[in-house]
Image (cartoon, rainbow, N blue to C red; front, side):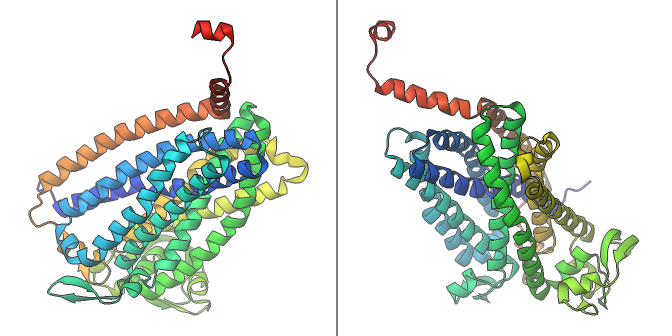
Length: 460
């Protein structure tokens, strides 16, 4: 059996990107939450907020480190597996990715050191400023990364000469047609991911009856945030879908499982897409609803996948089901947030065990939604790397063999399994220690500052 280097390279990059994506989408939202906590600590001078901030800073540091390690590998793959693509797009993607390092990563790394080791050593205002800079750094990082990815989805501001992309308008290239929709969608996804993780962990502490006063405050704040952002994400997602329909109609057709261009297209709740037969089996749908959602007209025309020849079609089953998983998770998050509002009376959400357990389980929901959305975005773009202009086959490294791609894929699986296991183990320890560990850390600092008693001096 001959190994296909293109297929293996796609699987390898999908695996690395999927592993990496779950970390920044969490740290972006968590960094803003930490900045808020330290802002409250600075304003109120309440040590409880310091303890809460210290706890989540430890979590952030671990996840940030795992994100950095997994993210570096992605840039290596551009050269090892996709060298033709790297050469052709270097005039744009090279500077953009370097801007991310210079303007964001250095900012995050420098102030993260102050955030981690500055407690009790720098004034509270400086500590809060460090948390704010880390938060801003995460958004600057996402700005550049999403600009690069959006350009690959909706290329603009460039011209191709001898197979090489040359930038003719930097502002048009950076702020391309799909950028703001993707940036808003991912920004809200990051806040929702951080929010549901904080809510889930806070719920666990309340179930364990540990430091309940502090975690009740944390849960209350987070539920208000989720109540606001979950429906807003649905609205932004709708705008993003309309933008995708305009620029990538085949992707939307795959999302809807719509093979033939038609007016009054139904919204399919269930179907089994058959790529080979170019049709669906066992369709269950709501008449005309897809047309109304996408065109705001019950009889609006929806493009079909068949408008493209089979070799230029994305994998419809993956796109179709990934989109439904993402939407299902999003609606579930809205439902949980709304239930939290109804349980506000008499603070029932704080002592309703079934709701607290639900929040614990919902910790995974935003990660599932993000990964499913990422599959829709990237698989739906296939077979293109630069949409409509450069295919994946054209961007592949010419000298790459199937054996080489398989060897590195297995290596990534093994190494990342070790990284994930180590990170999960340490995160489990941090969470089990909880805010009580941060409180002990503060006691140790105060003990170090005061003069030692005679007994302590003799013991030391």
